[in-house]
Image (cartoon, rainbow, N blue to C red; front, side, top):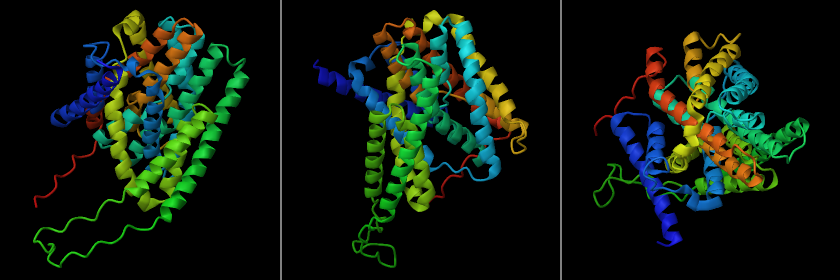
Length: 427
């Protein structure tokens, strides 16, 4: 079989596997993110070995980045931190978790898994992010109250870029490309600040373009009885795809440009652009969100099985019980972080703090960053690259699997899960 045919077969298999997982989730009510992970493991190196992502080579890396930027842009579009209580809750959670969560994860990895200190710090930065690619579908499934759902999504949107940039800089420190912690801090601020500034500027430009787009030509009005001349029901107005096309063009150029100038600044730029467009274009953002959300879900459906297929048991098994204890310890650390972050916040009661403490799954960005860093560590001749990648994927497996299955039950027990939506009336 030619290489081009094998590439097409891999993409086709990953797409079908993701669609099958989503279909099973719809029929069974099981968490979709868990099933997406499971089919990737089943069809990848840990199972039947039908999907071999390494054949895609380095071309997979920029594609994953573009699609993740789409997910982050979509999250920024609908991010609404309305009210001082919610803003304070998000700020305290992000700051406390950035400090204590990072330190706790590094200590657990260093003490329980055998990673040396530099790689333990890299792992802690990677594990800092709670990915919106899994948090958002879980929040939608749980039907949480708006403020609680926004709190969880905002945490992921903010810490996802921060964790990715910090992990890259700590990796460069570990392999000797950076000399000191001062370099790490200065470049962290530069990449985050530069990305946010570039994204805000691009979002402002995009919102101005969207507001000045001429409307689509109006169709002939339908007859008063709601039927066309042929006796058929009048068709709905056509979807205007130009705002979506323009948004994707600006977003992908923004992301790729930021990555070329300041690596890892593309993620904060995508979030910043989405927030600006969402704040300036209420109606347009609503319409864009509907279309972009579908594209984002398609990206998750394809990428999650593909990245999970790259995990092999040989990377997971050497970690043993120490790796499992490290991941479970992260849950205890998060509980402490949420407890401290919730001090002085009357808007969060004990039930909400307990649920927030439990929900912290890691997603696609975590997997993609780990895979990329393992390649760079191997190229630099640094020992422990396989263990780092295995520990990151073990973190994804346990957090997505355990929390994906138990969070709906916990939300119902705590009375925080909303009612099922009412079925649409029959025509």
